[in-house]
Image (cartoon, rainbow, N blue to C red; front, side, top):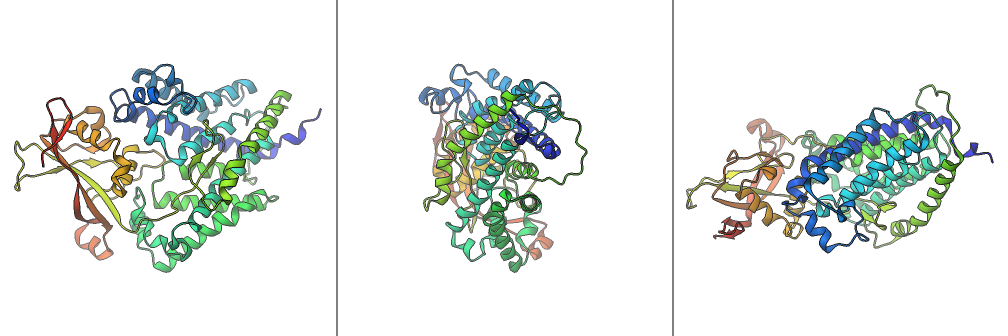
Length: 478
């Protein structure tokens, strides 16, 4: 049987660039897991994995940690993921047998699946499912010395279509400001984690903000259909999406979402001027697996596709336990006012009206008004992101914010490593409190006069003044 129609050497370079980029994103994801898991989901973390696996069965959250969990094992899983991802970035599996290359891509997918499925709220973001969905497809792309499987490349386009089109639909069905093109009046200021250029984006003229919104609608609601058109139309569509994603990279910090979207877009582009080496014919069993994969994705796509056309569209949802085919979307509503939770503590033996409260500084989220928003993406600061949600509503933080206060009062070293600055240099404070502030970007005049990036005003308490009780739990003293 001739299999030539199932492979296309013309996409050799796009396939290779996509694989390198995906491996780099895997590396960042595993590195973040290795460096942040202990205080978040470790044995003594805010939401410990052992407690989670006792109440959630394997069938609902498949993970190797259901059989055994220890912080040492989790660290081993995460650092193994780092090593294998690094090897894939370096192309160490480019010329291995097809089965070995597939196994090399299968291992990080299985390991990261195990992490995400026990990560609870800290791993509840859409880009986690996106990495797993795309990572699963990458298993079937084969090594660099064989032509890329056409069907897998089309499945990647299907991911990109759902990612962009779903995001566009959720906007048009959501906040009215998307329909009158005014959402960008607010978004750059109120997004979860602004970046170094967000202040400048916020201060663009309002007509340009409307152009931004209109361009977003066009790129997400019209352009995705061109991904399935003949070349060079599909390439033009992908390049336009890549340009839009680069704009988002410049204007904010969205973990690896934009970078992974760019990588998928690269897999569509067929104008990369790289000579194609002599390629070996893939084995028939690989083609058979690819056909089986395609049938599986088509079947699993029913519910996500139905969700796209539903008036009750949900975003960032997995319809299967392994995150194989998901639904995506973001910012169906845009907050118009930014709030931040500021955590303060003191070592005064008895706090009073003269007490000096010292502020904990987070790595990424706004705190000190004079500090310029930093660039962290594609690295994901999980605590910082959840602090943004907690400022929207404390119901997002009921399961972990009191525990965070307890860890800070105890000067827990692992928790303090998640922060940029500990005002007590590792010593235990006596009392702690959390207050809500209204933040806004300074105007250009205020920026010139004060050097500050933000103006903030107190709004009220989030956590009352607390201390550690005799058994180590936090006790309110207000």
